[in-house]
Image 1 (cartoon, rainbow, N blue to C red):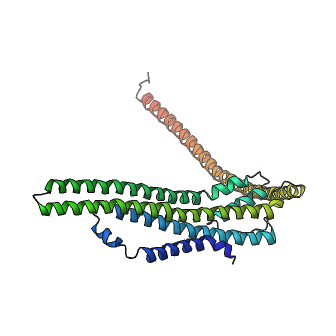
Image 2: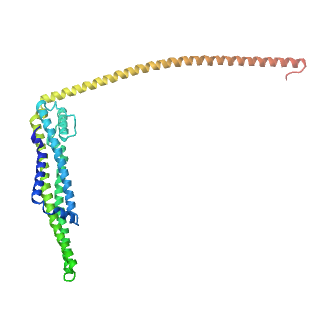
Image 3: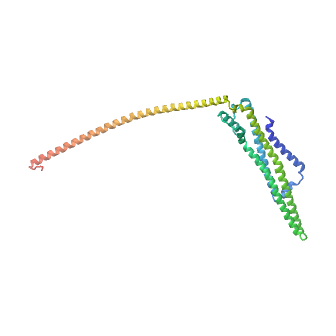
Length: 330
């Protein structure tokens, strides 16, 4: 493993250890913890909470940048040995992996790619995180100034009460002085904390992560310029490779279309066969129906003929009876 890949995380821990050693050696007996317990304004607690948030964010960012640098080192070794076209990346979790996946896709599609713009887009989230940590440092300085104003306000309030109690209320005088001293302590401590934590400590942590991101950017760009330029530069070999890929893709589409036509032809043959079977079945059923209708029609004719004969027989019988009685039909 290349030790330069761990430089960001190493510098972060080095600066954190330096801060702890300096504070332990110089300010361990300053009574800071006692002041925190007696601080009524709670501005100091707010400053420490915001500083802790910035420290956690800076540490997480340092770890992520270190992991990205390790991934960039691994890809650099792979590209140096096999080239960009043989680069095998299975995970797109890291920004460096996503960058080289896009780079390889652009090279295979014979497209024009702005490496600087793509790399800036992929690393933009880390840049924003580093800028956020810098904003937190500026916020600490602002909170220190706010604490200074609040401390001076408490001091003036305590001095006013002391002046009013001067000469007739010793206990109120001492209470006002204690309040004034507490206000001065708040003003000085908050100014000191805001300036040291935000303007010095967190600013250095921010610079460490910022330099780590810039080093990652330079490392990835160097890999592209040294080992990927041949695959990215427009050339006859690249155009032929792209044309071969397009022809292979076209052949695959033609085979797929041919298979679809064969499937459609087979389906049409089956459909014609089913239509023919249905036609034969319909013809047989209609033939039986036609015979039945014909038979019924014949029976109807017979019944009609019999009815006419019966009617004729009834008419002749009635005529003979009337003749025998000497009565004419009229």
